Amino acid sequence: MAVRPVRIYGDPVLRRKAAEVERFDDALRALIADLRETMRAYQGVGLAANQVGVLERVLVVDVPIDDAGRARYALVNPRLDRRSGTETGEEGCLSIPGIFEEVRRSRQVRVRARDEQGAPLEFVAEGYLARAIQHEVDHLDGVLFVDRLSSLKRQFLRRALEQLAAGELPEAQPPPAEASGSEGGAR
Ligand code: NI
Image: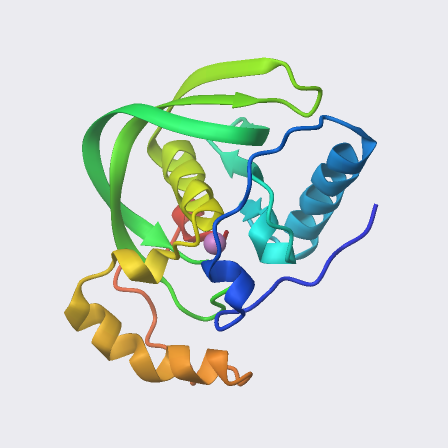
């Protein structure tokens, strides 16, 4: 297992669509182990393979769901459907350090995927878990959370994003409007 460097905004791999996984082999399981270790090292709540430069439809999430527990999944070839409701909540991204914004997502989604052995997996996710999974599935399609902001908000962030793409850290952003509890984690 190894921590892999997380690709930062401006890296073209973050804009590419990842390919379906066809072989559920040791290489896939090693990738998943690395994604988990990298997510932990960066203290993220989710990570998609694109973010470590691998264009395969694989993601991991590790999300607090209540006071007691966490939801941890490795999802291969995930598909989302039966969306219901909408909810706005704060998001960040390990590939877009320093930027946190409110994003509108479906409140509930059905998730169908394969696990790391290739077995089918199906569950309904809601709230923060649904948000994290939608954020990661977006990554697999080359979509970033800043794409889902209003054009006004994107305009406001333009300079910070240009700095990231140029390999600089953005100037400190104003603190998020609603100070983050558990919702502030980056993915
Ligand atoms: Ni992200």
